[in-house]
Image (cartoon, rainbow, N blue to C red):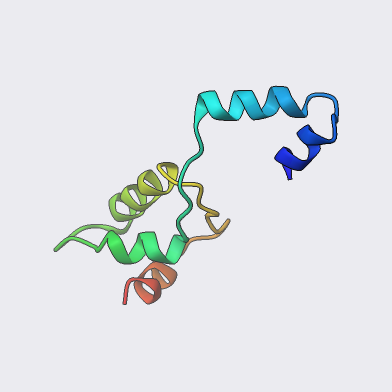
Amino acid sequence: MLKIFAKQGLPGAQELLQKRAQIGVKKQKHFAEIVKETPRQEREASLPWMRRILDECTKYDTDVPTIISEELLEKLSR
């Protein structure tokens, strides 16, 4: 959409495209995929596991649920 707006001459669109090019765009990854790729380690408590998952989410453009429970993580990790 931003490219279309820039072509149409929308004020600020070209500048945003340039800024985006400088910053780069993060790859997208679904939350469930990240949970599957970050298995719980043996005898790992819930909070450290959750922290590792959230750290992985920051590497990607991931929509993180507002409420994360241990049950949700267990379900998604299967």
